[in-house]
Image 1 (cartoon, rainbow over the protein chains, first blue to last red):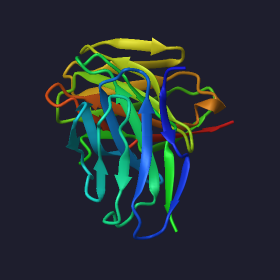
Image 2: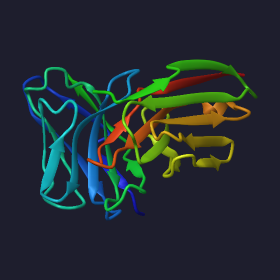
Image 3: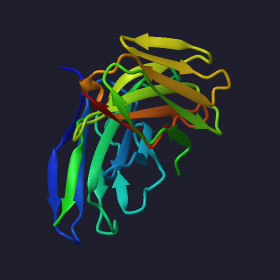
Length: 114
Length: 111
């Protein structure tokens, strides 16, 4: 089946540790996005990538890092510098090359700092 | 920061009522998207709009792309209990392909 897959669905991290969230898509989409959602809040853009080996900071990039070595993969690392990492993280992908394309989301990863 | 202003923030409606929500921005967007999110899940695309003035329906849902390209509206007709959830608007600008979201409208239906 074609789609976008995030793993794991639930993740627990100790304070001071880095953790990496996985996002894989087999839709052959060029653009990929990472969002953070806090309870009762909207989606805030962390990082986005329009093409392999290129990515841009979103609105809340501090304390996060990404890589885009392959078209189908866009992992997000939550570093120890992120002071309040507990949140719901959503990954999305979209076909590039024009404005008339929709974005599709994964099922999300809920990260909890313990 | 947040570029899209979505309203209302929340609403309680009676089953069978019609619902309206909107998004506005100071920026021009080339694409407007409307999503619904259930608790603990990723947002699911409802309607996509690509042309100013475009009116598109998907079952009981109707959305419009504003003429100024700075706003969009979503209407839900004859609401049912499964319409409960959070509805988000999203816009894509032509100059940076950044996908920006509104803060969401939480819909609760009274049976």
